[in-house]
Length: 638
Image (cartoon, rainbow, N blue to C red; front, side, top):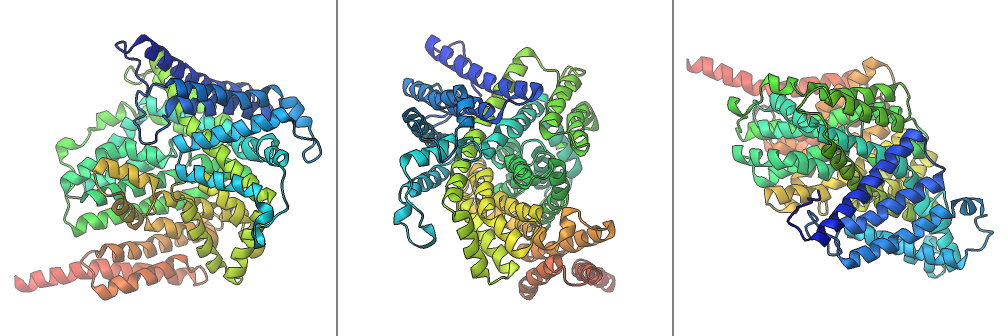
């Protein structure tokens, strides 16, 4: 956060105050428009980008890797900031005329070509600075492709496009491109939920989550690692950002894990796996979930319901993996002196009220932005009754600054994703790539799922979850729905899960780099450990295609049965990877168990009762047999 140090030179303090005010205005605009009712799409999106894209150049230096804390914009940053205002101000002022122009019929004006070019360039540079050079490179490749479509072979060949038509696709179209529906979601639902997360964080709810996690899990074997899992699940309900979770919870859980004996790469891998799962934790599941609601025309409350069991399975299995690792290495828990007292939790327990308000309103089918707005109001009201949580005027302004600053990178990432989807749609690659995957799979859904899984994981390397999800959903989900008859929500949840897991999948996993920087270890080793701990997520993603009960569809007895089968089967997989399941496992068991566990977890064609019986019998024999043998040996010795 910007610090307005009185000892700073006057010009520097004035510039930093301006940055603070600009971010504050950005957050205030989103709250105000949510309160009065959103403006017509072109206007809402233009003002959103006018405020957020320009803010990037005030918050992030041109050289990546430079510390952004207390960064003061240079004159070159200010110049780019001013240039970045122009194309979005033009779109704002000319919104009515642009809305009534006929796409593909009306000519693109020279001024529109200039503004479209500037908008594209500042978005590319903003993505490079604030999001990822990988995503910036991907957007650049797509834009260059538009200029050479008629030279490309095979499915990549398309008719030649003039410069005016390219600018029309990227800048003037309201349904796609920079001002498309993806930006529309960022300008409405995503922005208001980011503001809600900022208010919750400032209220001190993080303290409650941390104390609650320590009280629930801290005393047991491998306590700090289990605290990491529990607190990351709690934080995931309000942040929806893997890297944010890592820095928030990992700053204290990773050192604690190292202190009790976890290797640095294992400690950071556990934190990465738990934090990545936060994006799947309802009620706030990251920007991708809101986009999913729009793309599938599904109420957000239905997406929350569909995500509940998947999130429960994910965190349960991460918790089990952590427990097995701790037992295998005989790691202890936190001491009684380190654990919080009940009174520490009770003094903050009222901070859960806004989350309850949010969930209740969503389940009552209030629109997501209305539910979030009421939840923000409830946060201000409920915190007022305790001195330790009450918002001061300064805290309120700082919270709105934080909301604006956190929205800017999401806004520009969504604009970049909109450009990519526009290119894929304009040139027909959406259909062509999907057809290639369907042909290669030979009509086999399992094969198509594995191909698409690897596409999503590769796409997500160094690319934010939202962008990875949007791009691959545009390509892959129509193929799953049309060629294989997969329900629309199942197809999107499948892609969404693997877009999330890309953050924990080496070699390029953003969250792993964040955790490794705290643990002071190799990011690649952290990514490998994170993938091991998050192995359940890969199976959960697949289960959305093959197990309808994972989406809360069907009778409750079947839902519980499938839940037992999936958690039990994946426990075998986790035990085999750890080499421990009640006792150290023989090599032959470590080879066999992953296949048996995966088969029982995902093979919905096998009678459910048989799967449940097999899971219970195998786990019981593996866990209880060594204990019974040890007890028998003790009796014989005595």
